[in-house]
Image (tube, rainbow, N blue to C red; front, side, top):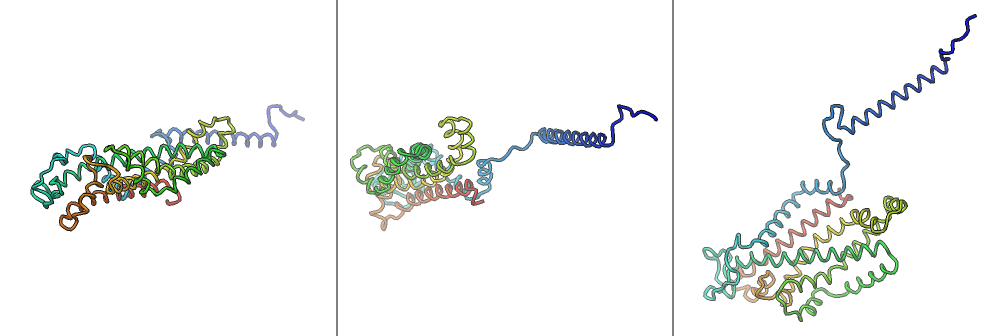
Amino acid sequence: MPEPQDNVPSGRDAISGAGLGGAADLAGSEATSLETVAEGGPEGRGPAAKPRSLWSDAWRDLRRNPVFIISGLVILFLVFIAIWPSSIAPGNPLSCDLSNAQKGSTPGHPFGFDNQGCDVYTRTVHGARASVEVGVCATIGVALLGSVLGGLAGFFGGFWDAILSRITDIFFAIPVVLGGLVLLSVVTSATVWPVIGFIVLLGWPQVSRIARGSVITAKQNDYVQAARALGSSNSRMLLRHIAPNAVSPVIVVSTIALGTYIALEATLSFLGVGLKPPTVSWGIMISEASANVRNAPHMLLWPAGALAITVLAFIMLGDAVRDALDPKLR
């Protein structure tokens, strides 16, 4: 009777070996397929697609939104004439001739003249600089101050959060126009900085509240808890993990508020406590034209129309940004 050979596996060992070999072959094929995908396909046609982020999705939606495109073009034009007003209005906005007072449209002066005989077209174009400067600088100041104070209060909580909440309640109780009449009436400077400082002083509590709530929501997410468990410092968690995911509401509110600040500057200038001559401003022009709206309506029509278009453009831009950054609206 022949003896069994040692190098011949039994039936069970053969089946097990076949199973292990098949599993190894399957794992090898899966690894090969993963490497192929990472290299961009079987022929190496290009890198693999990166995962999309909230900002990339928002930018893709904004490029397809006609409201964003139209408002963006209007704002770019306003910024252009604010920086280089002489490119489309080469005249001097302070050059006046009383013999032309309240005259209507004439060749070379399509918007007519004001009470002092100044060209309304030239003054309307040059008035964009003060309004845009106030709106942009005030928005940057409000966004920075409100985000820092609100973000720190929402992150640390406790005593500082309670103090900030009471301070914001006090500022919310101050009427904006009345506060401007009181605070700016004692200012004699004709520059835009007192108006910017006043808007920042009364505007930061709104952004602070929004930043605080956004940070409180973001710091409760799992990735923040994981970073804390791994020993990340407070500054690293706040700047690297929380701030990028909590800044979108601040951007939306600040974009919409920019148009509101331009309208607020015009209101304060209309009341005589905002910008003052010789600064050229739409609010000053509207204030000077209001007494003669029946005799010379063109003096009021053009600066008021420019102000309305500017405010509307920034509000439309803010709405488009809000729709793009809010995943719930998609």
